Amino acid sequence: MQEYYFLFALAFVYALFATIQDLKHREVANWLNFSLIAFALAYRAFYASATNNLNFFLFGVYGFIIMVVLGNVFYYAKAFAGGDAKLLMGFGIILPYQSYMQLILLPILLVFTLFLSGAVYSLIYSIFIVAKNKKAFVKKFNDNVKNKKILLILATALSLLFIIAGIYNAFAFLLAILFLIPLIWAYTRSLEQCLIVLTPPLQLTEGDWLEKEVKIGKTTIKKSVHGLSLKEIQLLKKYSKKVLIKTGIPFVPAFLITLIIIITILIKFPISFIHPIPLNLLP
Image 1 (cartoon, rainbow, N blue to C red):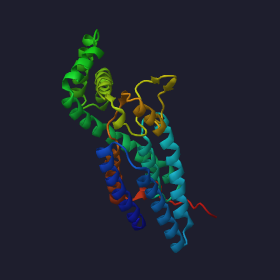
Image 2 (image 1 turned 90 degrees about the vertical axis):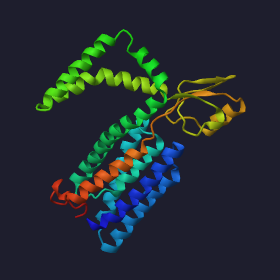
Image 3 (image 1 turned 45 degrees about the vertical axis):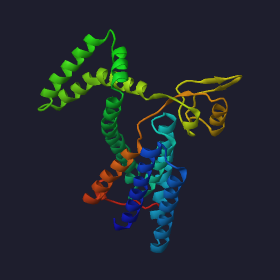
Image 4 (image 1 turned 120 degrees about the vertical axis):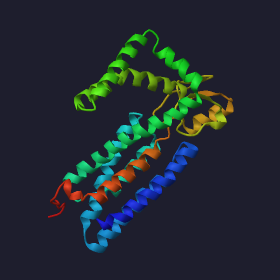
């Protein structure tokens, strides 16, 4: 396990700097993510060569490939921005795989922890956004629940009753969450509308997501999963055209939180609990 401590430390440092970048600039530089991938693979290659253990390098490559697939799925589903997806790829290399089973289960553990911690972090972060845009949020919330207030009040009341019962009954607690879905939807929808900002062209950055397509003369700039390109931004600057941009909650801090949780779990509990018998990749 000690051979992974360097990878853990490397990922922690990179995740820390990526978090600072994301909070400050709302984007993570490609060089940061790519250098994490390069250094992590280089370390695995060097250690594999020094110890004559090719599996140490191969498992890292396989972990990277798995996260490339998952990262692209989340990216095209608009769950992740490009920087988030690339950071996930880097995390795929640093996990301490020692068997085929761990090669499957450790990425699942990482992603599950990421979305769970990300949900808690996003909820806390969103409270500050709502407090900052209180009037706009209340107006949009009222618009979203118009003609549904009785249903919403009833669902919330039932949820509170099930939460009380859920102290002693796990099934009741699950029902409480189910009845909270209308309230969660109204809150999330109102929050999303608060995150749509009319942005001057000088403040645009590559990858910003358009809320709706923009027409400039005969040219139409369409919404894209890749966001605005540099060429499109230059065109908007040329005509001084403001556009509606869908901003979001900086998600990289959730990666840092997840990494701390995962490292703590893996160090405190032997990874053999996932699969006790290593499976060699080579005969």
